[in-house]
Length: 441
Image 1 (tube, one colour):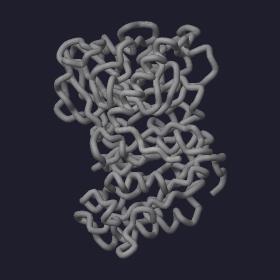
Image 2 (image 1 turned 30 degrees about the vertical axis):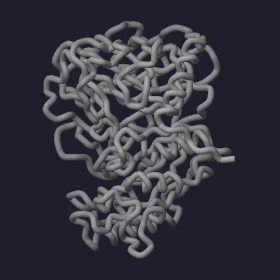
Image 3 (image 1 turned 120 degrees about the vertical axis):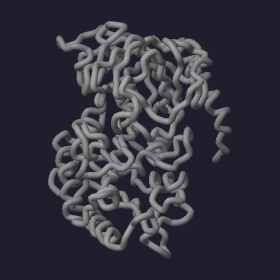
């Protein structure tokens, strides 16, 4: 019998209470720290030299984001401030670790204090009592991230629950910048003055912002999850125009399906979207370019993630819409095929999405629709991806197939609303996420 869902606040309170109980009884054991002789700041995200629980399980990406560029007006970074990123956890487990990035920094980033905790309520800067953990890096409580590099923390014992929010806080006392960030989080995070990395009450976190700074991944040691799906896309994957703080992006709805549907593979879903992203071109500017193209960032944002098994690829709309506009559908398809080849070389299965309608969007012209339709024809032919999800068919207006159905339109005739994002997730055949990569297409 179907039962009505608990009110959101009540459900989260129950979840947080259960998490607190699990924290008290969890007895995860670690086998120690190794480093392969590398500086902790120079270790890649997929390094295996960090502490790992002795119990059976595996590291699985539980949350991640793609750094979109250097945050404007942050040449000095955020010296003397604690940055508390709020992220939605996708996998239950007994330990966790994080990745920080100074990809767009022009100078070393000192991290003198970092912590991880469970949020006491959805979107709150306060922590569940007993869940605050100080993070270390290569066995040290502080670390420095060189420009252009990432930093993987040592694991901490912490019972985390799928569907709960996590608090990841960093403090740096000295100037360093520009700040590496994801500018379209659709999630409120917080800033406090001084070193308040282990403050549990959250009272000092009075400044709010909607971005993720420095933080690019959270991995969980899990006995439940069997891997991760990477959602690789643009602003539609980011969830642009979805309700902030509600976790109503299409990857969020897909994650909920994979956690609950009978027969679904128990995968987490990692959102590696960047607003305005293209298959072929990065933004102009010095390296590393803001908004790196799909071809340029694929290794960083997909192949480096922990436990990846499948990629759902939804790119190409911005190649058509953004200047310089790509008019040749074969060039877009060729770029998609290159991405598939790189995924297959790592044994990853790729589910590709048709390009969604944009009729009526500001500046869209008829010739662009012709390009979109031709790209979609090739995708539907089965000669590009291992499997296809038809986002175009799911979202389009039957009366006007070049446009979004009004019930799914957020208002700009390009980005879906919450209902549209749910429909996109529902359009994915769960069976398409299973199986092996097709070696020849």
